[in-house]
Image (cartoon, rainbow, N blue to C red; front, side, top):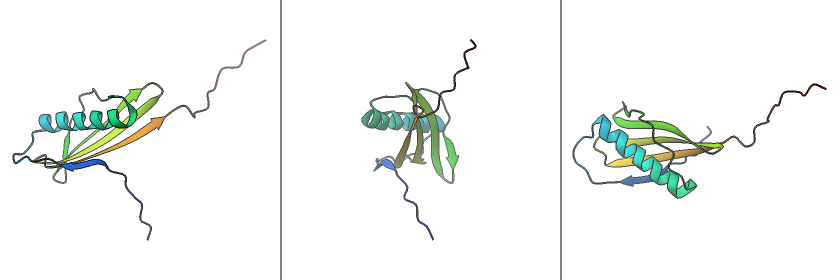
Length: 106
């Protein structure tokens, strides 16, 4: 059996007692993703209106935002009442890709 560690950033509890709507879950998730991205990468790349989806009793929001030559990918999970949230960010960097240029004809 192999156990792989999972990196979950920004896990916290916030006191709320009512259930979030899809619009509220999306807004909270985007704010949390931008806040964490600002702390880690000094940017707030998430601006798109990606919907939050209810999966297994939790709101899940996923998005990718471009920053220069990199992308930041986010996955945010919220309890239906907003009481628990986890933000998982991945920095995707394209600077190590090989660049192919057309051959020059002499």
